[in-house]
Image (tube, rainbow, N blue to C red; front, top):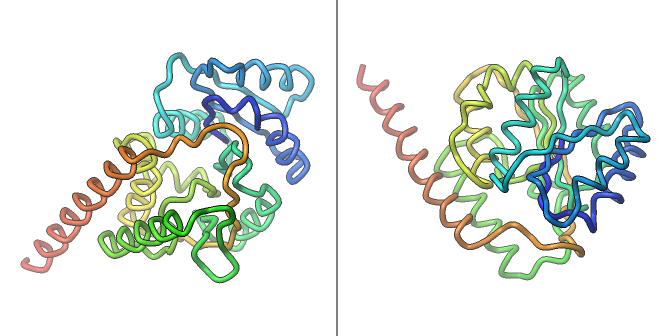
Length: 239
C-alpha cells in the first residue's frame, strides 16, 4: 500500500519494481486526486494488471489520512499482511520478502530501519542526517519505544496487529502518524515489533512532502505523548 500525491514521475517505475519483487502481491495505491495525473497512470496499469488497485480520494487530505484509509480498507477486505512503502523510489521493494519472512517468524510489525546495523541513507546533506538522527533519538527517548527508527514509512503489518492497535483511531496528521502507530502498538501490549536494515535513497524526481511545519508539529506531539505516557506510568506506580 502506498499513499500518493503528485508522483507521476515515479509511479510507473515504482509499480514495476514492486511487481518484480513480489509478483504474487497486490499493489494498492491511495491517491489524493493528484493534479499531475498520478491516478490516471495507476488506473491505466490497473486496466491491464489485476494486481494493481487504485483508491482515488477527493481532495488533498494528507499522508496520515490516506494511510489510515488504505490500511483500514485493506484490513476490511481480508488481507492478512499489509506492507506500506513510499512511491518516490526511496524504499527498495526487494527488502519486502525479508520483511514477510520476519512476519512468518513471529513478528507482528516489521520496520524497515535506517538506524540499525546494515541500514543507512544516501544523498542526504549532513544537516538532514543529523536532524533525522536527533529526531529519532528524541522520539525513542520520550516514548521509550523498542525501535531505532520511529519515522520510516516502510513497514509490514499483520492485519490482526493493526486491528489490535486500532489504526483507524489514530488522530495525528502528517508523518507524526508513523510514530503514533508505533506508540499505540507498544501500548497495546503483545505486539512484537522487529527491525530490518534498509538503505533509504533520497528521491530524484518530484518534490518531497516534508516541511519545517511537519517536523515541528511531529516533535510537539512526541513531547506531549511522552509527557502523557510518563504521567500514566507514575500514576500506576502510586497505586
